[in-house]
Image 1 (cartoon, one colour):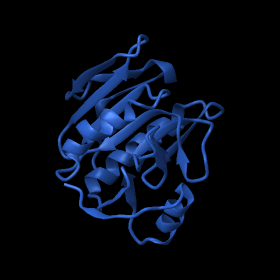
Image 2 (cartoon, rainbow, N blue to C red; image 1 turned 60 degrees about the vertical axis):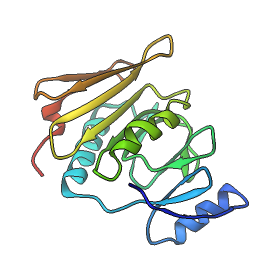
Image 3 (spheres, one colour; image 1 turned 180 degrees about the vertical axis):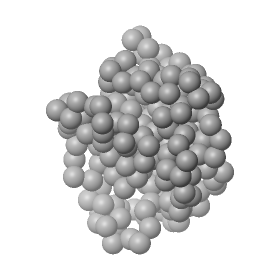
Length: 183
């Protein structure tokens, strides 16, 4: 579980950004509380790398950009999160994006429930978000949330090497064996 550092009343978003620039560790800002971001495993790191390589090799860079781990997303409620990987529309601010199309969160024992429930609730408020992936780093499993044309969210789970995840809006698909490569 994430540890609440303290409630800090920032007078503006810029105060939070300045605080983060000076901090030795990253913090998500949720409902006025700072949550320290902990270290990652080699498995986590490898999953993030595989997604970046896949996305950067095929996405139309005129329409989208890719970020990872140190770049924030801002939800309509004014909360800031550090997704592990994001694909965003080309309309970003210096410190954060508000128009992600795809978000990937790599799960851990300390973040699993938070990412599957609380973050997903917040991320659903992002109008542009079409895809949310929760990825197990040490076992082959991806939980794939995707929005239908009528705005409903569908959930699929993938566990097999040849299971294919399709991102129609991005004109991209891949199999689990593309992601789960040895570290």
